[in-house]
Image (cartoon, rainbow, N blue to C red; front, top):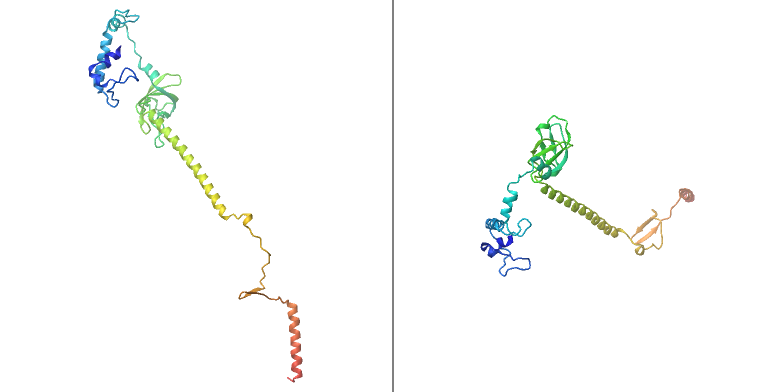
Length: 268
């Protein structure tokens, strides 16, 4: 088999990992690898020897011919047909619908945003035209390169170039950025919700300090209205008698009359 021509090469003997995952060699060193250039050289030689081996037990080989002999007999003279550039664009590139402005410029969602900006593309052939929506085909690993523009019916219009390379150069980078931003938003929302719960919990504890339970409240023995006629003399509270105005006038008149009679008796 082909692995025998490659793994059995003496130059790879020190790097052989075994014929299966359960059959490891005693001196197997999983951290030690063969030089890439040497491996490719051995692989190319192994493939060449395997294809040159005669007596292939296949339907075409019939136990007589080698793979090289079958290729020379049946396939070497066959006309080879390769895909056209248009076919490669249709098969290998991704497409996105977008709108072209009067300046022949447009943006793509594929590159996402960086600092709130998108990649801007320009098609000089579409400047001044009223094209509207188009289909743009692009290489997902080269968003800063050339893109190809088609109308809504799939008819090729022209190429476009990225004139403002301000966002991501690949869809992979855009996907990673979008995922990280969404994760950051989820974390931020969770932090805000947690902060609100924390504030409510703290306020509930503060309110308890100002709330007096019914069991701790003591009713006064007697309720007395405050009177401005009370005054304090040391530790003794005295209460003055309120004298009405009409009673005060009667007392004054009687006192003046008695004083006049006393003066008359004494000849004053």
